[in-house]
Amino acid sequence: MQKALYLISYDVVCQKRRTRLHKRLSQHGFTLQQSVFVTYDYLKEVKALCQALRDEIDTDEDRLLCLTIQSNGFKALHKPTVAEVEIMHQHPLLTQLLN
Image (cartoon, rainbow, N blue to C red; front, side, top):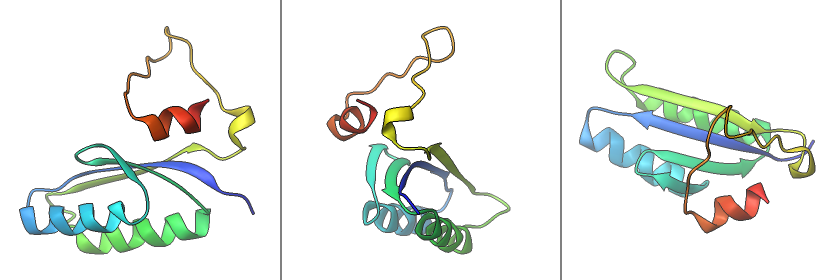
């Protein structure tokens, strides 16, 4: 089993829940924006993390998104062309992972 790169994003109404999610995600990855995190881990660990996050949110008013960015190793990372999507960021850790 190999590690993969994941993007986790949330939109949480309640400040208390939002703070709990931010603290938990900060232990597992790094933030690109206030509610957007990147983590590099095993699928089993990310599934457990996303389930724990799901248990903390109110599904009637909050949103949680957990996406696999890359699962085949970084040498095979698909870097889309500008026509597909433009990746704009200034985070050194993400630059390191994408190069």
